[in-house]
Length: 126
Image (cartoon, rainbow, N blue to C red; front, side):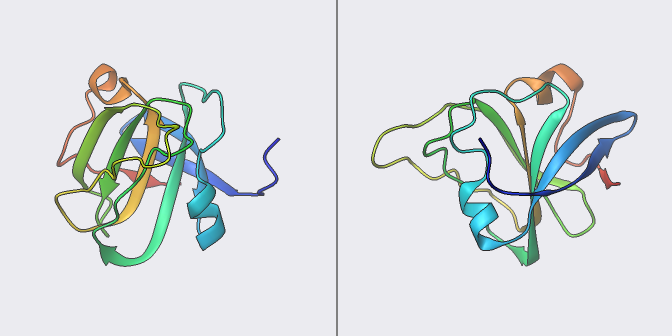
């Protein structure tokens, strides 16, 4: 059971929208999707930061393989790391983006390829 009450919204790439939980607080960002056993195909988690920076992510205690998408302040995709496997060991290698970002979107693995989501695409938060 998820004790966090995330704010929700939508992140859209053209006509394709993901219903997302928005991680805004430090505790929500630390928890993220860790411990979840499934994620609907049209669902995701959006991590919103106060400013652009390099935001590494870890798959520690994340049970769902994910595609991780970094977006800049204009909601343009600046980096994507596809098919990030779960990690349940003590140390999990961080996934470090190559560009500055303000938002990070996690969706089910394989969806970037399936839906044609690529670096340079622009999304919209609704």
